[in-house]
Image (cartoon, rainbow, N blue to C red; front, top):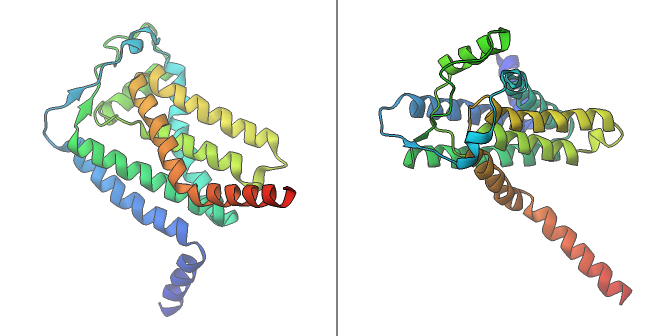
Length: 227
């Protein structure tokens, strides 16, 4: 028993960011479960461009791959590239917390899901199953989009993939596919996507600010030396 406790302590010490993300995930899921099941009046999100976006059931595949895309990448970076892993965890936690706050004070939902489907195939069945499990509420900003952007940033930055352009390109392509899937299977509005992009830009500026300041200081120092 003591050896197990000692191992857990050592693991948490060595992979601090990963453990923080794991603990936060539990808190987040509990908060999200509460928001999904509370009885409140929802503000229906409407964005004109949504009417021109077609439904495409095939994009259920990248939409579902999001779960593995986020979990595997976070674990991999927190273990193999701790610096980038810690920044990614900070980025994800900040955005997901803001999402919970927004959903708490501004309950929102969508009426975009199709009532009937033109085709009957396994992908449509998967979409129907998703609709039955996941409600169309608490959608602004889209966490699918926000977290995908966070993963794409981390993948682009990490030194682990500097010499693996094919893998990096595939992961970036999957991230873009996931973002597109949110509107193509009518799980989100384009407004959800846009707000997620804006939020990711703001949080990025905060989470990576120290690095930006450091780079600017180095540039200024170099300019003075050249002068």
